[in-house]
Amino acid sequence: MFSGKIEPMTPSEESQHPPIPRLHGEYKVHGGKLVVVDLDIDGGRLRNVSVSGDFFLEPDDALDDINRALSGLREDTPPSEMAAAIEDALPDDAMLFGFSASAIAVAVRRALSKASGWADHQWEVIPPSVLPTHINVALDEVLTEEVGAGRRNPTLRFWDWEEPSVIIGSFQSFRNEVDADGVQRHGVTVVRRISGGGAMFMEAGNCITYSLYLPQTLVDGISFADSYAYLDAWVMAALEKLGISAFYVPLNDIATEHGKIGGAAQKRLANGGMLHHVTMSYDIDAAKMVEVLRIGKEKLSDKGTRSAKKRVDPLRRQTGLAREAIIAAMQEVFMDRYGAVESRLTETELSAARDRVATKFGTEEWLHRIP
Image (tube, rainbow, N blue to C red; front, side, top):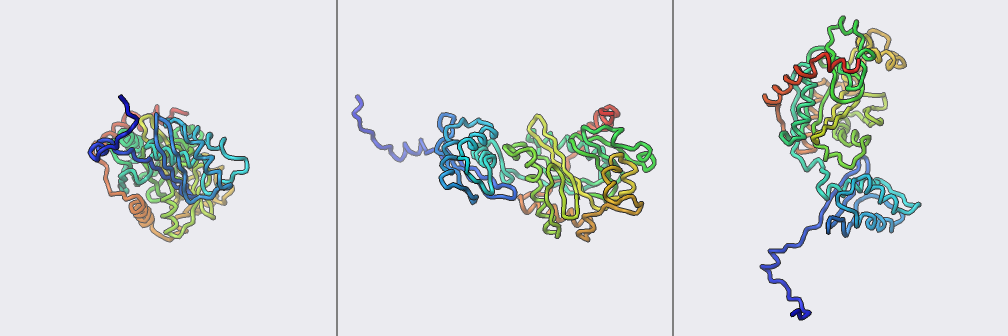
């Protein structure tokens, strides 16, 4: 018969039933403040949510509204719905400085281990090695698949190549982008990549291209537009170290006060892997570029580049450094920032890329899939 008295657990019994630790998540807003979330899970729902950070919020008691809005939500609530719940709960005069409802949702997802941060992964860096352009493009698909499948750690790879090439976006029209006569005259290889975006004209040493292969958990809850600047924050730090003050121009352009210096593109795969890659101009022959790219004529028409001697050389001109020195500085910043270790391509990965060239990237069907 129950006496109404609860006997305290002995130390041995407590060790068998340890308290469930609070879940903790953090998210540093790009260009903003740190958002921290601590919470419990009970019955599949968020409980005792506590949001904190070095942000600014008015009115002061709006923080209580945020905590109440999150408490009780199911743990599988999509980040967009979390953000909407927060926004609905905030008073009309609420002012959020350095953070947002979406940033809070990212921190919650990280607390729930549904999203990850840079420090949650062991990063690897593959230094540049000269490869055919078809192989470089195929490796982007192969390595993204490998990271998504968990067979390779998240990786930064720098490209290198020798043959002059044009790489067109996945959704671009071949005939609208490429001048067939110019391509033939200059011996240019044309390849189609898996990501969207615009065409790239690449000669040996004229630009800097890198690819990030990552799990999509790293950008969980971050908008498609914001993910570009988020994934390239380390690049901005490296450029700053080199004396270049760069910034993102939505959606995917990297620029300085002197104009655009590069552009990014992304592709997300069904297995959870994600590709983010960037090409930045080092020393491009603009006259040749407009002979092989049709769209290039229109894009450069207002930039005074009709002279055959004109070059697009923002990185070389603004740093005065050799291309190799800039790449080395970028690699050093990435490795220091994220604790990355140097890696290399495996023979299995290279073999898979060669097979992918034979079956996809080197075929006329793929190249001309959009005529």
